[in-house]
Image 1 (cartoon, rainbow, N blue to C red):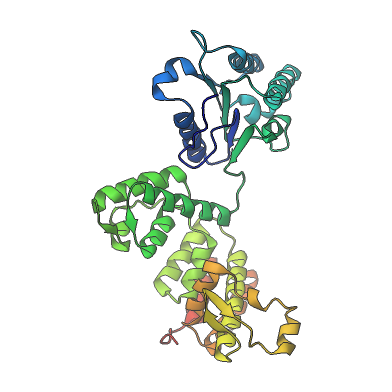
Image 2 (tube, one colour):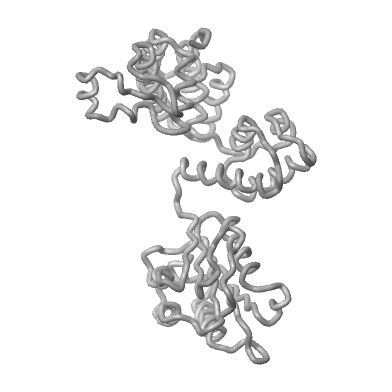
Length: 378
């Protein structure tokens, strides 16, 4: 095998077997392509790269594709055999329970899994790319050896995990294409495009072309050129409330309900948000907490209160970016305002279960009362 190289994302290229998996179709396809770029020079691909499409619909076709992969892994490279890479794309036995339960398919899968675990012939590499895979399966575990690598983009991610992954991808892609973008513009960009990786890459390319080389993209640029395609998340709704933005709050109420979000769940999320803001506002007002270092220092909290919190004083209001955001939000409220807001929210929750008026009307009326008139920041 030739000397180890490094793929674009830093994946080691001295392994013989790679499994690239995850729900994100774009990132799976991109990672597989990057591995091929690093492992197989373009001049060698005519004879040094076998592409085998596993997207078939019957048991017989599945067995045939698995056997084709197995045969490719043991065959010498054409004309005296240099290095060889086999790319097995979207094997059907990983995504179809019906096909996977076939005894003859199980036998073939077990055979190729054992071959992967035992090690492939010198100079031979296997790349398997798939969106669906059972991570407890024999096939997945076959890639756990020292000569194999799993590149896993995750499955059934929660909304916050998808948002974090989208932000990471957007930062990476902006750097890759040389796009300078302000933090405010990036936050607006992500709120507009959502978490779909292919959309993120496409819209960043469009934004870069619009701004031109060397220009920094601003929030106004994003509003002008970036298409809206995101579904709004609950934290967009709580942020609109916490920042006391009446226009945005009304828009978010209508958006969340139109998306099928449960009104009681929305109200409960606001109660949690207001509870965090109350803790932060009271701590700052009574000088129990001091903003700094990206968070709050609660070292001045009285011992009797600290004991009641079980020693978790430094976790009040969240951590990292979320805590910094809540500190800014708390500065737009007084303690009295926040207590009044909580009162209105509790009234709203009761009305939602006892009143026949439309949820949208109830929420808009009560929550606009709750945010009131924002005072000057303190």
